[in-house]
Image 1: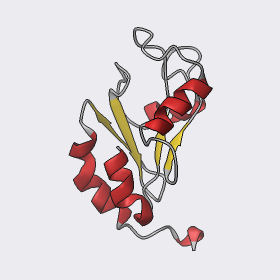
Image 2: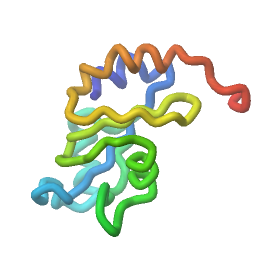
Image 3: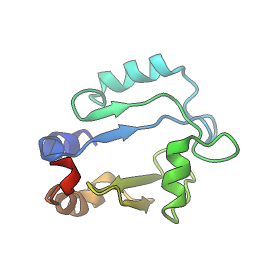
Image 4: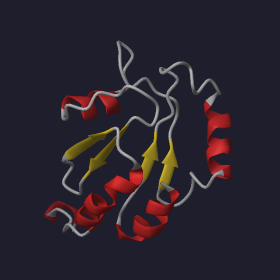
Length: 120
């Protein structure tokens, strides 16, 4: 992810990470500790955002994931188990069970899109 951010960040790619503890309790730390760990690994900075812990499914699902899941057929089954790309027009595309590297071609296409007229 850091490599993608480095390569495409200036072209408009923003990566947003949402820690979640719903899958075998893989992320038990509090949000500040998660952000410190992420920062040490290069996952925090310009164009790369680590958000607060969220629920990605169930009755306490965050509004962001309720939206993402309602607009795609992606089922999230594990931490780092799904990636969502949102283009400049707000269209959501989901990619379950792929590596970030597998998204490179799609990201290249999306960062070349013209921004919507309302953004100019």
